[in-house]
Structures are given as C-alpha cells and as structure tokens.
Length: 75
Image 1 (cartoon, rainbow, N blue to C red):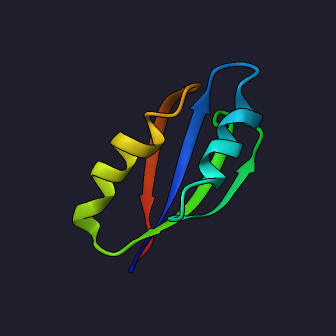
Image 2 (spheres, rainbow, N blue to C red):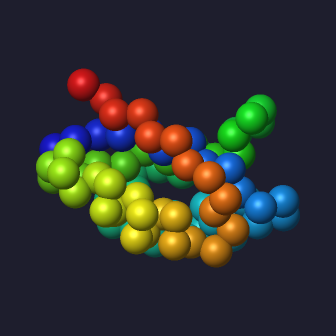
C-alpha cells in the first residue's frame, strides 16, 4: 500500500463540505482542517503508486470547492 498526504486549498467557506466529501472516499483515512497556506490535510492509501495520480485527479480534484492540491508520498 502507498500512503500519501494531500494538502488541499479550498474555496473560501467550502472547507467543511470538502472534508465531508473526502471522508466518503474509502481510500481516505483522515481529513482535517488546518490553518496556514493550505486549508485541509488528507491522509490516504492506495494499492499502488501508479493509481495515486488518477485517484487525485478524479476523486479529490473533482470535489466541488477544491482549488489546488499538493501530494506528499510517504516512503
């Protein structure tokens, strides 16, 4: 399994809705509101690193209110 943390910048006022949508995804282990440059940090696991890009593009960036993401892969 590949573990990654995704930093998410959300539209103003949409943070809680984005977290709710993230928590509905099976791959997401945790999604928390943070303060600073980024609004949300999400921990997720996918079976293979090759699946990570598609998962982020289709499932995370597809959530209404998500403006920008940054991916940190755990080794």
